Image (tube, one colour):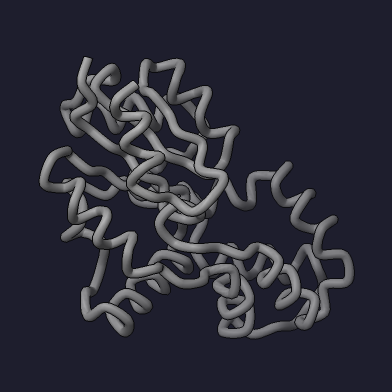
Length: 207
């Protein structure tokens, strides 16, 4: 069955990321064992709650201060948290424009109320567009819909809300852990382990 719908992840697929920059930025703020802190935070509900809007930016900042003992300001924590966000190569926006002519495009991202406004700010300053909305049929942001990858319910939500069929859809993500749940509901997937290009997407669309 022909693929009619392409679902893109944001960070690591469209927008370049470098997690080590955030780690280094937090180290400068006084967190001595950043890797240990992030490992513990991943095991707790800190990131899950923030990315599904169960906690506010203030809650997130306070939790970081409470769990690490640092006395950084809100602005300093935001700057460190946003340090991982890099650039968006213009060719990727052109790629989206091309596929928008032939397919339905959707964005599905685990993100939050600190990161995403920074992405919009970057887009406005760099490309003169206030958001990614013109490039997609719809954006599905975890903090707006209250669901987060890799749980299967977020993929089921997108299929139902967009009124699209799983077997006619393909999902691109740079985290391999996010792919099996999408496949469980019938969506084809592409693991993005290098910069995306039209050839790698077209090859999957033809398969």
